[in-house]
Image (cartoon, rainbow, N blue to C red; front, top):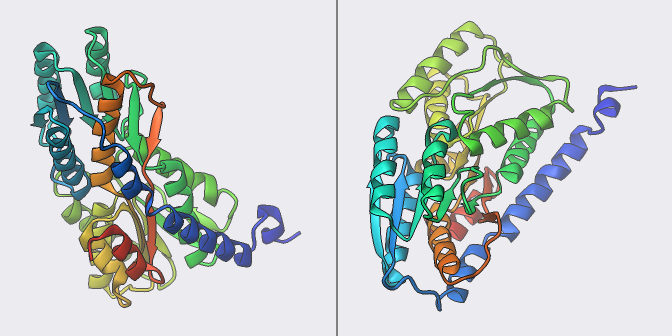
Length: 335
């Protein structure tokens, strides 16, 4: 029995799956823009809506945060918006203050679950509805997010396809306590276990905040020096795209452009690298953060109007690779 027989996938099957992946993401691309028009009858008139952001230094966070503020205002409500600047102590203090102010609802954008969940529970116990963006908390009535299971699986399939189903890969895994990052990482592991010739180099890399790009550059440069032979590393994966920026820069600086990088979010600077035929950036799963933010606020309005919400609301993402990047950028409206 061959390795292909044992895994259930040969390279041809991988390529087919990668092609289907791209079609699935692209076919979903117009969903989000269609939902806004359908929700125009919603209102937050007379309502005070708290918006708590872990930080806004990243493209996704800033887009979601600003879109939420704008949507609360568009629906006639008063936004109470706070940004913790990636400081967990400040984040907890701000959540305490918001609970004391008793808004009509709180929306939490991201955050390490062990840090924020006790305070989301306190808000719930105080009778304040809690909704979240990219937070898998049992104390949230509704979580608006991308389908991170699909993102993780499809990005992993793209990576495995691009490296021919074999080779060593570097993986950043510094934020497993953040639900979307954990899901994407788990899906990577779930996919590559069927490809025994794909190996994650140990120890895994740890992405950090702040100075993410510089730190990723330094870590990857050190590993490239440790594995100097061409082909000894095939790809570098990260759960979000800021480490991908530093990794891509390190690869280019070392002249190791045979290595490809993979990440998630769809920041314009990363999509620009994917579009560059000479860049090591192989693929990026592009989320729609502004639409995620708007959808979360529309869900607040639905809840306060007496509607029942699903546990999760998914906003489609688009998998951008070298072949489809022009189409993805056009659909996202950031070209």
